Amino acid sequence: ALRGMPGRTDRTDAIGRIRGQIEVLLKPQLLHALQRMDTRLGPLQKVAGMYARLGKMDGLTEEYVKQRPGGVHRAWFDWAQQATPSFASRKTAVAETNPEDLDWLGEEKEMVEEMRAEVAPPPQLGSEGSDFISWLPEWYEKVLTLLSEERRRSAAVFGTDLAPEIVARVLGECFRPILPSFKTRLAALHSPEGA
Image (cartoon, rainbow, N blue to C red; front, side, top):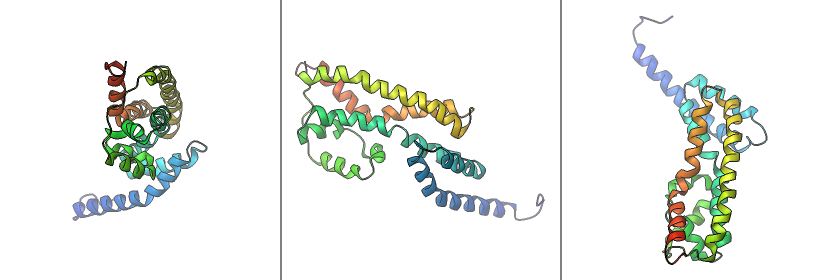
């Protein structure tokens, strides 16, 4: 209706600012819906519809992908806590992890930061190496369970066109924050000290 009228750039800029403000206002609803999506998908689908109408699906998918593998990450770091009861050894499992990659921990992130403050020697798995080797398939099973659940869930939330991309991004997010500790554990398994 306003095509050809003067001030188009101003209107476009104003609409962009308003969309950004609405996205900021929707963020708490999004985070709440993401926390509750294990029991109800309806609120998340509703928020996803609002993000789609705003043309801000990138923000939604980024938050979604960051939150989905939280249980897998917790399971990864829980093994370190169970296998290495001392504080120094426990700290080693997260010592090389980037602090920004631990946003899913929430309040527990401070504990991880405290653990990073001290320097610990590389883990010596010894007999724990066999425990890790027997535990690793269980962890991979959790990743596979998450991905099969994610295929269904992302199709329900984002639609069948976007679902494969979301599943692939969730898979990447399963491993991104744990890569340094994964490398450390595998190196300890194959080092002369860890054998």
